[in-house]
Length: 466
Length: 74
Image 1 (tube, rainbow over the protein chains, first blue to last red):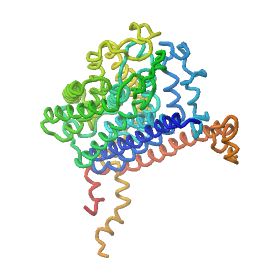
Image 2 (cartoon, rainbow over the protein chains, first blue to last red):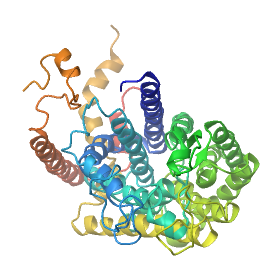
Image 3 (cartoon, helix red, strand yellow):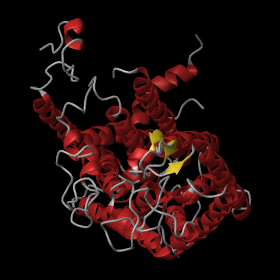
Image 4 (tube, rainbow over the protein chains, first blue to last red):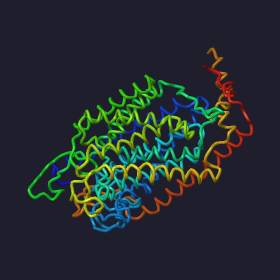
């Protein structure tokens, strides 16, 4: 960097993403608190460790191959040509945004004086990966082995979500070109896929002992520490601010980028490099949160657990189009998503005996799916990209946003890249006898030995007088 | 091993080399291999110890409320 203005722009962008990463760390803190608050005392420590250990597992695999997948797979491969090299192959050539630069052994995956952005951008996406894995973690508490969860966390966090991000959350993604897919703040690419993945795992894993009566009636196993759940969900809200900011490019000149001669237009953009403002999405974030809370309080009759979760579901449902919606549209969409997610949760639980311990499939999966579909109607006709816009199914240009494309996109996110791989991997782990803890351990409590080992010290301390 | 031994020389070069970590340009692939071995090894070690712990606990057949006797200070 040799000129001051260029240096300021670069270092501002570097610092901007760095701040989002720090904020998003709170999402994980929140998920840990939430899960521990929802689990029973005898499982607390293992529940906490399961979610905590996804941090290093997803981080190292994201370094080894997850980040490379994002940059390599926008074309499918074989589905739509890249606008960078006009090939449908994996993008591994010498073009600017090629995966070649993000192999784990390249000089850009380290401190490099010529690259101020790769590390913070890598980390922002990594924090999305943790979130995807953490969503799955909550649904399956108290009965999965840590080994199995580690494998599943890597699969969703460093493989399947990054494929979906390449397809539908990359300026060159084939889903934008062919389907007109639009998902600015990740209703589908994070939430629907993770919810679908969790549902696939739950189908194989089965319910917690005691969740269903002998006649099949579901029993409520409520949160054991509602205050921990409360603080956890507030922290997830807080981290979500960082998530929204991280989905934007903070400062970009769209004139030359779009090839418009003589025009300079500096703006923030969304992940697709189309214009939006941090100010505008702040309206929508808060209004969709409010819509979710209002609807959740009403439909759950003031139940705190569902009301808090509904605030999250409201944001998730509106997120696909929150770069363009009016705030009241965002609020209404959030409300619709919450009502559908809540109703579907209990219908699926009763009908298929699915024990989603924290409602993660509903809050993230169903609300995300519904949000994508609604976005197709509300934003019908908007360009999915600022680059050349063409006919649907063309593939060489970009389709406009449309209801059918969004619906197909939702199926790809929730079903094809979410539920299906979750189910298959869980089946394999089940076949190896590694998926579920033994029945006797589930009854005794995963923490039994830890508690027993500490018993003599605890006794001595509790009876000590000096 | 040091990639930079004099910052003035480094930054005044015609083309400044960005990678400044120890072993730049020669050690990256080896580091990745070591990292992958550590990652896979962690899974093997922890899976083994988890299996042993779960089998040991399962054999004891504790009741659903037995853990309460381990809580001594409320």
